[in-house]
Image 1: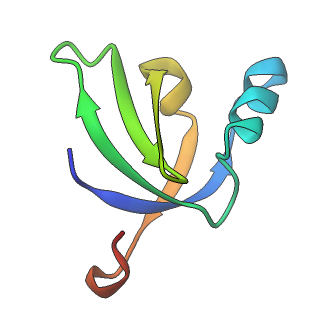
Image 2 (image 1 turned 60 degrees about the horizontal axis):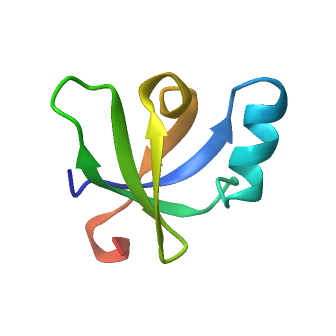
Length: 73
């Protein structure tokens, strides 16, 4: 929780991929984890001033790289 990164790619097939892209999960976009469920079933992310919750199986297919400390949102 609180970690920030930049999206590199979305590696999920089909309609889920299209939906994630429509929600703003595109390459180069900053993202921050704001909530995780205890069992790891889902997590919520702050992306483009909106909090979006994803299932673990969907969020695990989003590739990110870390941000330098001075660039964290």
